[in-house]
Amino acid sequence: MKTLLATLLAVIILQTAVAQSPKPAPNTLERLEVTVHPGIELFTIVQILAGQYRMPNKSTYAKAVETYFTPYANHPAVKHVKNMGRVYTDLAELGYCFDNFPDVRIHIPADSLNWYKYYGKDTVQTYMQLCKQFYDDTKFWNFYQQHQADYASWAKPVRENIAKQGLVAKLDSLYRERGNAAWSIYLDPLNGWGAHAIMTKTLNPRYANRVAYNVGFFNQDSKDTDTPVFDLGTESVMMVWHEGSHIYTNGWQRQHASEIEKLAYLLNKTDAGMKQNNIKTWSHCFDENLVRGVVIALFRQHRTPKEARKQAAKEIVGDFLYAEDIADVIGQQYLNNSTYADFGQFMPKILAYLAQKYPQPTVSTR
Image (cartoon, rainbow, N blue to C red; front, side):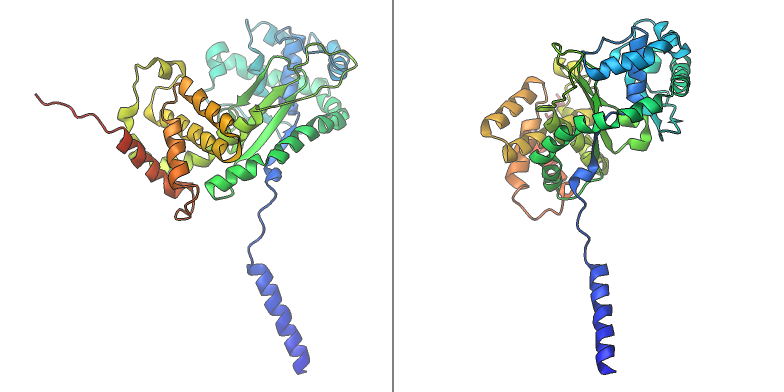
């Protein structure tokens, strides 16, 4: 009987210990998605049919798109965007307002959406509804499902490259916490013109904590028999470290907003660099300098000295004049200092450093 009680007691103690022990942090790659976004692909195809998109580089996939969707070249969605005047290629990002596939749910963006200013709110929203009709009429989801193996094969090397670099883990390490940021890299097989970040908060606030970035297939010498290949190069570093830092530091900047505002004298509103960067407020200026300073600090930690110097020089040329100062104080007072539980606790030191190095000019009363 004593043996049985002892065994039961041991099991209870073991179960309690397991329940109370901290769970291991999920693999950081769980926060990284690499795929072809169905909504963005849908809008891209509609624009191509309307002649409102640069023709894609040749590939087996581009040929498949042409074969499947050309019969719908006179669809109301195609006619609508054809009549919208000059349409920018990145209007296809409106597809990010579509989610919950295959039963599509449409998020109608707020009045601040830039596309409303270009084309009018009613025109844009009508276009979105017509693209939903195009989705239904063409059985777009069937086409998208037929190419899942292609999308997965394109995504695999991109995902493996980012995993090899350990970019997410290095960012977590600097901030000393596992942030709630997540990353989506959307492969754009019909896009031969460029890459850009998608403003998730503006387009679809359900994904406000997600960094979304699309990248195209840029081989202009490709043939109809070629498979799209995607290479982010150094852009993957900036996407994870720079864009991710905006999400990490957003709450801490709100927390220290009053202290940040005390340094507003550092913003020269007439400076040509500020106008070029479309920066009109000190809070925006500090936000950009902060995340760029973090990136420089990460380069100093994990890249060669030459790469770090080039990154710092790039920010100076771009008129982000306080980024290197912020990187300096992070390196000198934070990285090897366990005093601070996380980066948020350290942020007042950054503000104090800037105030000391750039004291507010005294105003003469004479």
